[in-house]
Amino acid sequence: MGKCYRQISLEERCEIYRLRADGRSQTEIARHLGRHRSTISRELGRNMLPKAGYQPSSADRIAWARRWRGSKIERRNLLKTHILESLAMERSPEQIVGRLRLEGSSHRVSVETIYAWVYSPAGRREGAHRLLAQAKSRRGRRTRKGTRMPPIPNRISIHDRPESARDRREPGHWEADLMLFGGQRPALLTMTERKSRLLLACKMPDRTAKTTARTMSEMLLAIPKTARNTITLDNGGEFYQHHKLPIKTYFCDPHSPWQRGAVENANGILRRSLPRKTKINHWRDRDIDDIIWTYNTTPRKCLGYLTPIEAFAKDQGVALEI
Image 1 (cartoon, one colour):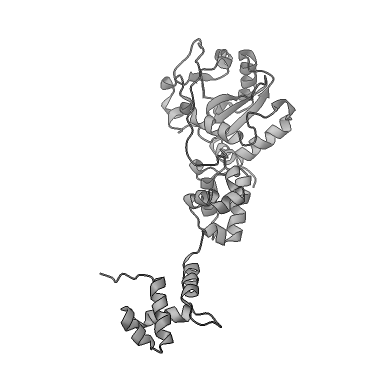
Image 2 (cartoon, rainbow, N blue to C red):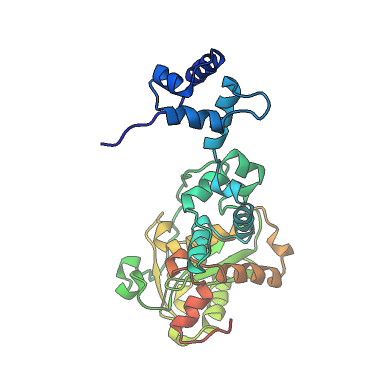
């Protein structure tokens, strides 16, 4: 078995100082402390002050400072700058790490290291936690209360959805939802393609079933027919006229938003730029398009760090110019 090394304590440093003052040699000091003479030699060589010589308290502080290195991110300014810029571009720690590996970067950092730094005093001083998707001051989950399910005619359960939509093997299966804003009639209709995670969005003047069906039909007809197989909805009254859509519709179970995980995740990311207090009427379509473009050009871990628009184009056999 290997030998177990223990650091020199402050009491031992005081004893080294006393014995040196008595004129003892390094070999005698080592024998007195039960240490190897090379340990005493290294201690004196590393922790001695240039002018004052060997002082126990100073030697203890020097040794501690040499051992403590702090966060890797805090010690590497280029890495810290890259992480802050990527977080500001709405990339998650997983996406940052994955993209660094995909690009063959010399920087090596783990997802947990980024989260630990973000919530450390140094990261908080940089405001890094405010750049995360949920912008929470602490890590952890928040519980959500369910909402009442309105009746939907001709409703087909998500459990009857094709297997190819469930396991994401085949492109063209979508999920849709409405993003609401506090005390306002307008809403944002969002649609996410399950396989590529491509996100489409359109602002609506109200959230009536008629407006929702018309807007969603226009969005669906604008994409290739090969990319229109099914769409999964929640049980909100805005989807009452789902039978008018040019696509097969399925519905989640009551109070089960996790069954439409792709669009729920996308909406959570959009909330960083469009919180509930946003005056959505004051936003131009061009501004919303910019936010959607940022989402669709952000690398995703589930796509092997391709972007959603790259993955969708690949599924459709379209070559993108880089």
